[in-house]
Amino acid sequence: MNIWFVLIYFIFFALIAGAAFAMMWGNIQSINREMNKPSKPRHPEAPAPGDEVMYVDLSRDKLEDLYNK
Image (cartoon, rainbow, N blue to C red; front, side):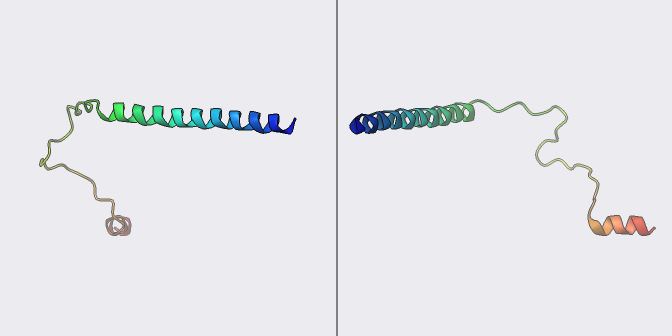
């Protein structure tokens, strides 16, 4: 009777290991398909590479100067 439990254990172990491998394989294939898709179009208001943009300097020194004034 003990041999049957060992046999059933290894059968279920093989099923779980196979299912885990299949799930990992499917996830990797899904990631590869996503990476091969063309990228999303740029936002119309996004600056082109090399354009100067205005920004707010929020460094600690500048904020302390503003607070002290």
